[in-house]
Length: 459
Ligand code: F6P
Image (cartoon, rainbow, N blue to C red; front, side):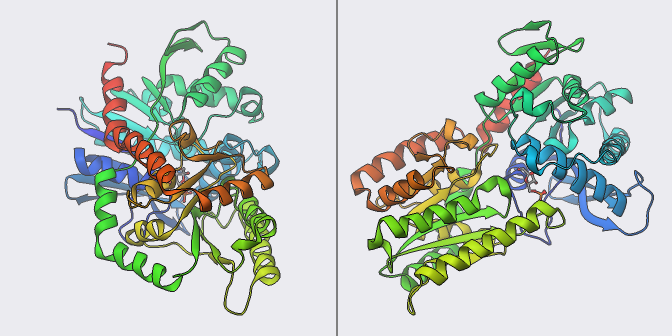
């Protein structure tokens, strides 16, 4: 059987809890298959020449971890710069927040070339290579330039924007052309596939658009949606474990006569956090029976705080949260609990189970696995209600959630109220349908379907 080689910018760091669904999902995939996992070590070295990071190899069970340090300059231009100040905002439709600094692209190319150089000698002839996310789009092209012949698949965890938004990136054609060095490109949703094909058709002068094969830039690539899932059995086990049970019991005791609404996100502008706070404020205003009885718990984990857009967002959000508490709070009730720290993963299911309403309301999101985790953590006899943005990739699969437009403050407040008031039978029916979909499309289904499509590609 072929060995699986996974490459992602971020990989599991035993010293730190995982932020973001990618690391958790890939950890679960590699636990099943074993193999090699290459990525950035998380270290930023003060000295060191750009493009010359040191490679460290270590064994973690059946997985070989190959990590590369970044020097300060590479971290600045590749990670904070091109990846998170150009690709991240544009792929999330936020041209207003993009910083098209012409120096970033050199760092992005240099780090991708370095990953290719470091990976090549570790490869075996029959390896299957699976590269992840927007940090590493040109990696297959760099590997091919060095003579790599193995099958290479790519999965993009973030959305594909419509062509006229993509075209704002000065190097958009080069980026999209790079994707044709892969044998298979996996996207989160059908909407992403439509945008990809539309781009290739209008900007890439596609020679032929088949059902799944796309021919352009003199090459053919297979493009399909593979919506990522969670490890349902593992998350259910975490839900039954003592840390989660205690967390849930403690919250229920503390908020005994109150209903909790919960959001767990990275503090990212794609997550619609200010919009959520405004909608919660509207809920208190329009439905005052919730005053003193509803509490919004917002966990917004720190992320990329060297990028300006994130520091600005933090200020805005903290101002809004403070104003809600100042305007509506009582001596014995604060409407909003805002926590700017990461919560330990083992506590997440307990938090979800204690909350009557799970709020996953991004302005744009590739998938959003918290939506799936919230559903799995519920008690099927008395489940909470998921309020989900129609702009999250998860909405294509989870249409029994209450789907909302996060830009519409009043409608979102109405949905929060509807969720708080929903009768038990309706909650049970919606929950069991959501569970079925999440279980049949779990992370193992995702891995199996992607890897079998990759095996079959170009046969
Ligand atoms: O899921 C999208 C993603 O950008 C992943 O690639 C990433 O690991 C995660 O969000 C968290 O972001 P970061 O790695 O920048 O902390």
